[in-house]
Amino acid sequence: MNLFHRILEAQAVVRTKSGVYAQRDLYRRGDELFVSQGGGFIRVERKLGTGDELGTSSPTTTVVGYDIGELRLVPGAMGRLMLHG
Image 1: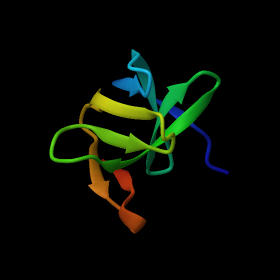
Image 2: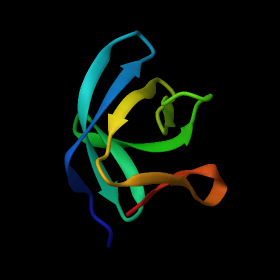
Image 3: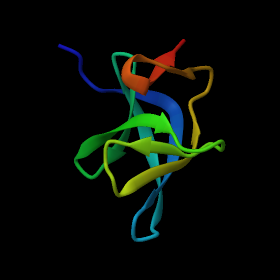
Image 4: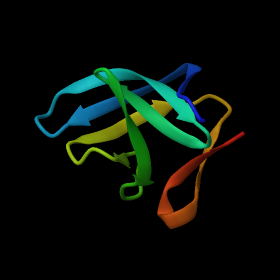
């Protein structure tokens, strides 16, 4: 079973549909990247446009910036972003 593991010193800034910005810890589960949200997690899924914005599994939350250190995000199956490194 794959569990969620915090990526040390990795952070994201998210924006909700209502315009609220928040800084969140980042987690990995296997090769997938997740943002903490309340008592759960939102999967980071795809790039939005040409900037750093990333779409998530929550239609009301967008990642507007992130720092994952030496890890990289690469396209995976079905266009989902996967962690590499």
